[in-house]
Length: 110
Image (cartoon, rainbow, N blue to C red):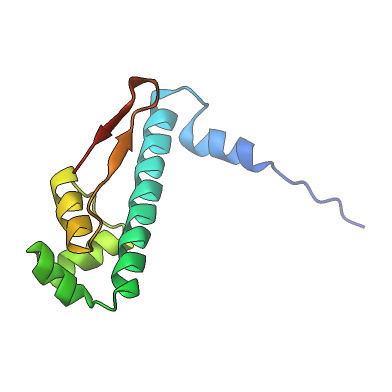
């Protein structure tokens, strides 16, 4: 029977992105983290919109942007600014939000 050589995923990641703590690895992990956060925020927007039975076009009109912008936000394909986030969530009836800065405390966004 043939012996199978398996390479741990961590070894492959180190080879492709560099070792932990290197500039290349830190940049890649930072980008990945931003994309994951954009995805989760987009999912929250989509779920809130669907719960209110709104189309992307209707939400876009409430926010003052085109449907395509709502589509990009919901899919996580674009970064959202705090002013746009405020308008989107206020259009969805979410009247308050805070940002948790850890040891620096919480700040009200709107």
